[in-house]
Length: 467
Image (cartoon, rainbow, N blue to C red; front, side):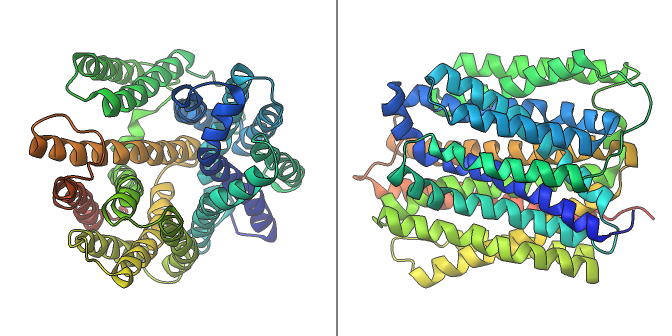
C-alpha cells in the first residue's frame, strides 16, 4: 500500500492509544499507595490492579492479533478503543476495589485489541520507504506515554482524588474513536468465514497467566521453592501440549509455520532481549542511585527520565535513517551503543560521576531508539499479509515477556549474589553491607544485561531478509 496523507492521519489515532496505554501503565504505579488507603485494601492487594492488567493484556494479545487477521485490523483496533475508553470511565467512578478490578479487566481487553494490531496496521498503511519512520514515531509515542505518566500523575493526585488518573483517558479516547472512524482502514480481514481457535486461545491464555504468576511469585518467595518449580513444570507441559495442538488444527490460533521464517524468528528474539535489558536497568538502577549512592528520590526520578526522553527523540530519527540508508546498519549501530552502555555500567561504583551516569543514560536511549524501529520494520516486513496481525501481536507479547524477565533476572542475579555473600537469604538492600550490593549489582546483574546485548548483536549480524 502506498503511503498517503490518510496513512499519517491514521497514525495519529494509533499514536493516541499508544500514548494512553503507556500513560496508564506508568501513571497508576505512583497512585497505588493513595488507592490503597482510599479503598481500604493493603498494598499487596492493590497491586492486583497492575499485575492483573498485565496478565490479561498479555494473555489476549495473540488472540486479538489473530482476530485482526480474520476480521480486519482496523475493526479490532476500533473495538479496542471502545473497550479501553469504557474501562477508563468505569475506573474513574469509585465503586470499590472489586469494581476497579473489573474496570481494569475491561481496560486490559481494550489495550490487547489495540496493541496487538498497531504494528500490523502500520505495516499495511505505510510502504517500504516510510515504514521505518512510522515505526520510529510509534516508539516515540510509547516513550511519551511513559515519560508523561509520573509527572501528570503527580499533578493530578495533588489536585484531585486518585480516580482522576483514569478520567484523563476519556476525552482522549473519544477523540481517537472519532478520528478512527474517519481514517482507520475499513478492511474486513480475509473476507471469508474463518473460525477462531477458541481452545487454543484458552490454553495460550492459561500458559501466559501461569508463567507471569510463577515468575512474580518466584521473586517473592524464591525460585527454588517446590511450588515455583512445579509451576514452571506445569507451564512447560502446557506449552508442549499447545504446540502439539496447533500443529494439528486447521485454523490454528498461532500458525507455527511463521517461526520457520528465520528472519522473523530471530528479529522477534532480539526484540525480546532489548526490553529485557532495559527492564533490568529500570529495576536495578534506582536501587543503585537511592540506596547505594544515597541520592534523593527527586534526583533519581529526574535521571530515570533521561533514558525514555532520549529514546523518544532517537527513535523517529533511527526509523528515518533506516528508510534512507541501510536498515541493518542503523539497527547494529543501536546495538553497539547498547553494548557500550552495558560495559560502562560494569564500572559503576560509589565514586561514579554524575557526568558519566548521564552519558551512559544518553547512550542507552540513543541505542535503544536506533534499534527498535528498524528491527520492528524487519520483523513485520517478512511475514505474509494475512499474518500481520499475529506477527504484530507476537512482537507486543515478546516485549511484555522481555519486560517481566528483565525484572526477574535482575532480581535473581542481585539478591542471589547478596545471599551467597551473606550466607543467608537476602531480599532487600542492606545498608551495613554495601559491598554485597555492589557485587550483585555490578558483577552479576549488569553482566547478565551485557551478555544479552552481545547475543542480540550476534543474532542481528546474521539476520538478513532472504532475497
